[in-house]
Amino acid sequence: MLTPNWQTGADFSLTSVDEIKPVAVLLPTGQAATGNLWGISAQLIGTNLYSVRDTHVFNVSFLGGPLYHGTLLSYNNLTSLNDKWQLEPSLRYYTQSGAAGDSNNVWTTGLRAIYRIRNQVSLESELTYERSNATGAPNLNGPGASTTAARMNYYLGIRIDF
Image (spheres, rainbow, N blue to C red):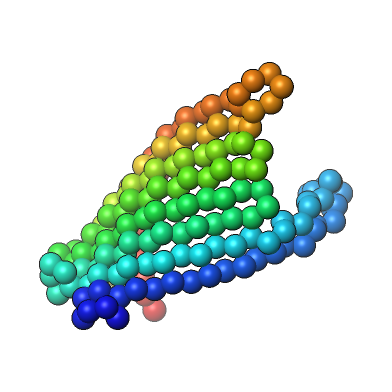
């Protein structure tokens, strides 16, 4: 704990998935082992900065393996407006570069709203927008192909806590 309102956190992960043997219909060529995939993250967490029930999480993550390296920067907020309403805006930026020269950059923003109907029943809604730019690895014909994509997702649902 840095102060009563600020904390830090960190984690490290290491994963390796073995080779998957071919399966006739599902995966006829099989899949190679991944090698070591690692991740290291650090968080700065602020609570009760402008109200009695707000939380802010700033995160930086570095990811990597034999074929890629990536960086994730994110901010998440949770703000309770009153006993019934809660808002959760978020912003993420992810960039990845591959060993072959390919790259990917993704911006994502979102807003989640929760309305508590009863003590154990909530109406939840979330809207996210993502924009990505990907560039393929260069080849004998020149630079790799570049693509841009935009996605918007929305959901509305009821949550019942038992």
